[in-house]
View (cartoon, chains in turn brown, purple, orange, red):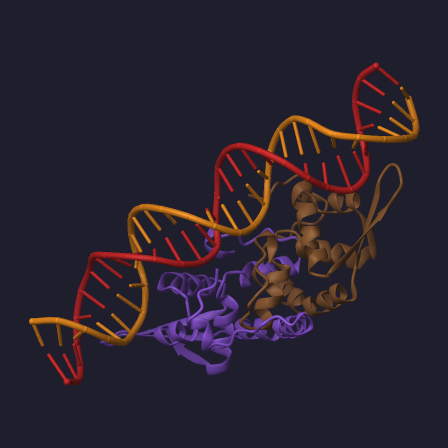
Length: 126
Length: 126
DNA sequence: TGGGGTACTTACCTGATGGGAAGTGCCCGG
DNA sequence: CCGGGCACTTCCCATCAGGTAAGTACCCCA
């Protein structure tokens, strides 16, 4: 969907799945939440080097609406907000497994450089 | 990638795979070529209701550059051009299987309407 | 002779996507 | 008291994917 609120009608399952996953950082958010189970806003921000706060909140809100993540607000001071995957989110991640493997193969095949998490901070993507 | 020529550097496999698959009609093209093995330009155009000739050629060229499809031109009159999947294209399709299944589940879960191939012709997507 | 099919290319236009920067309200440590 | 962290929101701007429409060059069929 993204901000536009696409959400179908869809032509097939791939169509529906891509609608939910497309967005510059959604894949990474999914991956980060899969790895750490639960993450706070600022932790995600640091994990996705280059993401703007605007985009991060936007993506998280969309993923919440898509029932991929749960947002829990703790009425504390300073504010604390935690994000976790829902069952559907975890299922999506599983479904993305083979695709990720294919992508890794492709990177290897073509000898493309793979920027690792840390370096990416310095290098803003065009 | 799409027309912009993104093609990495990528942060992970998902990133790389999504780069190659994103584009409004790529999923459908893959699916159509998987089903029929070989298709001509005009056949694809008819199979993807609503696609413009420009987008179709653009997507096909990109997929060719990404080594997903092979384009074969027959020096005949009238011109004949055939498209087939490469091994990588077929592998990508396989990798997309679980994602498609997840998407179908999502459609079912949310009771979203699924527009089938034929109807989609009449209904231009917003 | 004119309409339709083949497979495109080119130019122009619009709306969605994402980036940048600043503002908000509250608290804590130095 | 100043800076910094937290978790945002708002606005404004650049880019770009994709749509529309037309042009190309050749052929076949009625």
